[in-house]
Image (cartoon, rainbow over all chains, first blue to last red; front, top):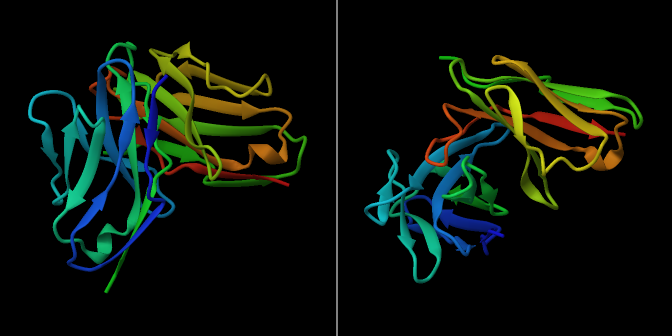
Length: 115
Length: 115
């Protein structure tokens, strides 16, 4: 069975500082990896995904994540955060062979950006 | 374009009552997912439909929970009888094909409180 570990439940940072949100997964098969963001009182929105190819993937709002197969990690980073990045971030994994996207989510990391 | 629409946004009811949550997926999407989000267990997949047919309901907690998708534009999740431990935020998501490389689009959720 797959599992996703997000060790940090909350990460406080100051505006314009860099941030890294950690994600490790456990799976015996090949997987697809995702980061979703959830703003207060809203549903989850896809931030970025790794399917294949380059291990570094980027989002349109400056986030990036790198797939590291040997360390089974998919950490999310941003070089300079904004107040508007305050949200909860979920890492998720999907087995490539299940036939449909059966997402297994981590417990989430709350990013708190202060001025 | 309209996203995934869920109703009601909030529901407060007494233990033992029947609860019905509703979801309208994005037009043209043939896959629909129901999730439950709690502090204790995080985000869990309850059931997955493809072309209106339930494909995986292994996450449905017990017989008190049932889900239907009578047509491509409507799904319901019903709890009968409801219990306080069912209190959670319930999300509906849809995707174009349900395949593992397709993003899921989430609704804003229904916050359910069972007294």
